[in-house]
Image (cartoon, rainbow, N blue to C red):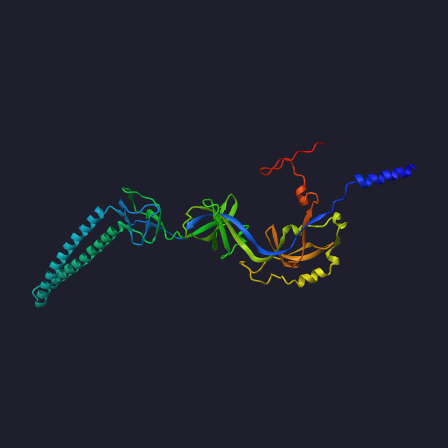
Length: 416
């Protein structure tokens, strides 16, 4: 009788108080076509594509300035002028010297003609004739010399008026009215003019670890602090071979085109650059988590686990996969894409089947599948808790000393 009572009590406890085993819920997804890319990030500075430095070839004092910062100027427009009084006086002096030289030339020519006539009739000696000839030739040379000096003085006078060599916008004005500029050894810079600020460029500093993947023609997006909601686009134009070393970090200057039709971009702005080294706009994608999933013992009670060694159809399916994207044209600088072998688990009714795939691009969130899957495969990417409906990983205990997200409560340490 006692045995029957104990058995009944044990059965009642078993069915009434034991914890019901909760079923395992898998996180799954279907492969989908979408966009994936590999990129390189860097910072750079916006600069005009072409700038012209305007200086002066003569020394003097600035008397007039007709252009200022941000002034739009045309080619041939007068933008500054030096004091011309000394230069004009020098021109007047050489003009007077030229008149004297021409007058002397006229006299010497008349004298030469008389001496030549007398020499032909034997009235004067040959020595007198040669003296007259030499004096006449000297007078002609003197006229040419003074004329050259006058031309130089006129040229220097013209240099005192400074004209814009191009159409553009004045970026820098380094002088003011009344300032003396000296052109003795080097040409002083008066203005810096940008030819066309609707066409800018970014001079990006790309680390040596990333520069090997960067090629001319690749697509680039960048942002500037002045317009945090705007994304600007461009292309890699050139990679300069001269390295820059700062704090033992080697970078290479990369020139990126930056159209500026709306004139939002300004010289000197700092740009946060993203260079897309490889892109595919129509790739078969799965979550990167799928490559890390591995079934554990708890799943064996609920699903039939079929590894690759017992699924002979996996390799055949990979060879016959109709969604092969490896042969299509890519927006890469090279047609060579690094292919990686990997495995994923597919859920088919009550079975989990391991399959080999060939993966292409991987941005750590999504993975491009080149061979092995179709859009009808149900891929396992994780395990959920049946009670919470959240991924099991989300229920993992956090350290109370780790930084918390804004608005979240810190974890309370368990008592020992």
